[in-house]
Each structure stands twice: as C-alpha cells, then as structure tokens.
Image (cartoon, rainbow, N blue to C red; front, side):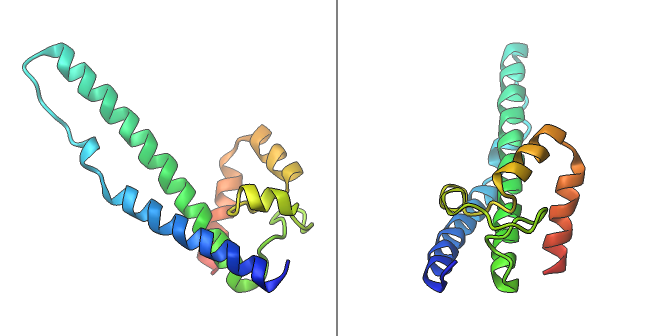
Length: 127
C-alpha cells in the first residue's frame, strides 16, 4: 500500500472517529423516563433499548477505527491480523477499519466468539 493510499485512509478513519465520538457523547436517549401510562413506559423502554444497542454498535465501531489507526502507526495496516496476508484493497476501500482479510473475517463471523474481540482489545492496548 502506497503512502498516499495510507494517508487517504487515515483521513477517512480520522473523520469516522470524530463522527463516532460525537454520536457517543449524545446519550440522552438512554435516560429513564417515567410515565403514568403503562403503554408509554413500554414504548420508552423499547426506545431506550434500541438506543443502547445503537450506542453499543457505535462504540464497537469506534474501537475498530482506533485499532486501524494504531495499525497505521505500527505499520501493520492493510495486513490481516490473523493470517498476515495482505487485505484485498477493495475490502480496505469498502471497510477501512478492517483488520482481517475476507476469509479470516468469514471465519470470525462463523465462530462469533469473544475471542476475536479479545484479540482486538489486545491490539488496542498494545498500541
């Protein structure tokens, strides 16, 4: 991967990181609201649950973006964290925060375990 490609993806990742940080600061949607109407309370609870899921998803994505930025700093960006093969440039263009090649990502998705997330946490703390 050329220096200009890495700079382009760094700019994309920096922008995404700032956007996610802004979204995660907005937590008013998870406030517990009391209502005399039971149906309203159920509706508020459902909305709160959706907001919590969205925050969880966005914080996970923010972690992935930070890992990608750390990998840029240590020179391993664009290389699969599992098999050490180059990640397809089309995959990087579509998902700049990808840390796995498509084959390893498919394996991780099939496994769907926290061991993959633990590996990502190690990448974050190592940087």
